[in-house]
Length: 114
Length: 115
Image (cartoon, each protein chain N blue to C red):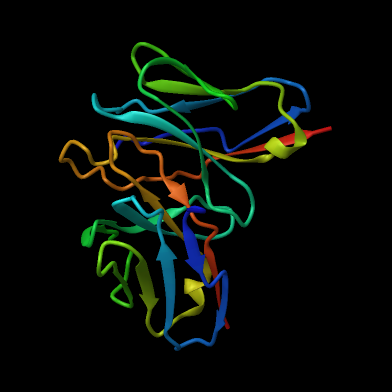
């Protein structure tokens, strides 16, 4: 296993289009996080899953954003009707909940909305 | 969730020891303290984690005083490649039934190492 994998690495889309990102966590990890990061800011929490259950969703996450983790393995993050303000790096992380907070991050998907 | 406060930026020179302090006055009994490093255009990378006293691994040391209201990440003999943003996080990873399953990042400390 080579770690957390995200696809695509880069995405350019026109405003108003829908986009979907995929995250493949480390295989035995049961917790998966999604973050958004803009230039000069720390990663901003969006949502996280424990197995297939979505346990928490940020209040900042508008209804245009949806995430799934159907079988408790890979996850997808969809943004509908993209806006220029959605341009950011989208990061995925996974961990095996065992009393610590060491999460493994992917390389991210950089979204540019034009 | 315990809020953390770190310096926005720090400068250092190659070969020096760098200490970055993080304040977390409202840390809870079950909370761990975790530090991440992030290079541009990459995801954060776990550096070290501790609960109390001192923890050391191959890249850093973490000092936590008895009251646990602060912690200090120590990087020995930094090199140019240590130039990055360092984040301090506090939480229990959601293992105790509370609403702390999310990992909350602040703005971090931008460390610049000069030759």
